[in-house]
Image (cartoon, rainbow, N blue to C red; front, side):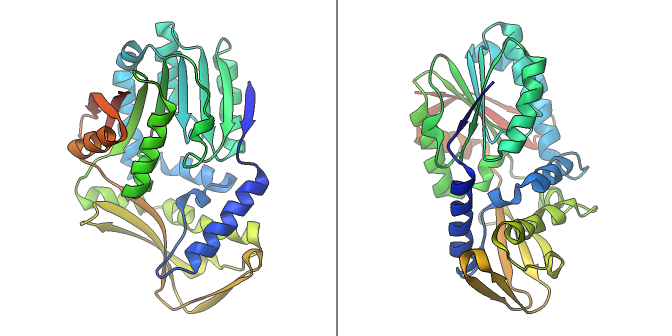
Amino acid sequence: MTLEVHLDADDLARTLRADVLTGLTADPKWLPPKWFYDARGSELFERITELPEYYPTRSERQILTDRADSIARHTRARTLLELGSGYSTKTRLLLDALTTAGTLETYVPMDVSPTALQAATARISVDYPALRVHNVVGDLTRHLKHLPGGGARLVAFLGGTVGNLVPAERAAFLSDVRAVLEPGEHLLLGTDLVKSPTVVVPAYDDAAGVTADFNRNVLRVMNNSLGADFDPEGFAHVALWEPEQEWVEMRLRARWPMRVTIPGVDLVVDFKAGEEIRTEVSAKFRRDGVAAELSDAGFTVDHWWTDRDDLFGVSLARAV
């Protein structure tokens, strides 16, 4: 098992400082969702994926369970590159299918969290001893060019995470993925589908309050990393459906007026009661829109699958 680091602790700290300074001096205020994910945030998200309200993980897992063998036969992938791999829980369905097909030689997970990356791949190395595992610590919006080349590659970007990017960011990201691949290589993309807000919103505002705790974790990250004095309980978790954009927004809403000091960026931020920080956008998609965005980036969709309830879509696209 090898480790390639393009995002070390110093780079991560610089990026956090830049995002906090830019986002919390904007009007309205915002923060990127990647800062949820310290060790505690990663554990909270794993809990979210098992909640009854959170359908995306179950729905995508059902698709992969049903279609992994087809994916393996169609791609004949020798290298599986997984972006934002986290704990790699669904990846095993692809690993099993590709190793059974006899083609897979190398697994390359990429994540910003070296802790989650190494914990997951340590188990994979034991369970798939013939597989070469090449860990890449990096930011998928900056470091795709460092992904290794060589033979029949399949890039997997699962979980609907592409929906965390706004349209211009998605276009840039998909173009960057296409630039990494040779013609004929493949992208497996998970996309949450447009549906009733009565189904979507509870997935981001569960009854047990796990998502609220996850949302507030971005404040704890700033406290721990930048010496900030946020009171996480001073912010209410908010999840709203935005019909024009067809996405869910997660926000943190100040319960009362407060002044927050962030020594790590030499910043003092005042919040009015009711003022919000947008912490995540989670776009929902339609089949035609996914195909159009992939086509604009230089892909053609070979296969499109949904779960039995049409809640989630997985597309297998080929670089052209």
